[in-house]
Length: 98
Image (cartoon, rainbow, N blue to C red; front, side):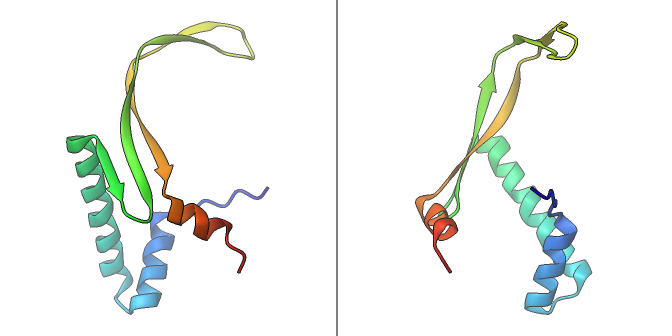
């Protein structure tokens, strides 16, 4: 499997090519959209995007973990993580033969 990361710059270039805006303006749009999504997730702890999926903040308690190489035990601190569940429409389109 080839690892090929898709960056915000790549997204802004695609948007710029598709819509015709300058790449600088497209980058600002992408950054504003991402900042808005982060703000909504922080404040409401749930974000549902129709036909895409839902993002949900989950609290994880402190637990112990182990480095598999050295077998040393570490404390993994409590933290918030984001869970994403894809919508049925997204999964259907993903698995559709073209």
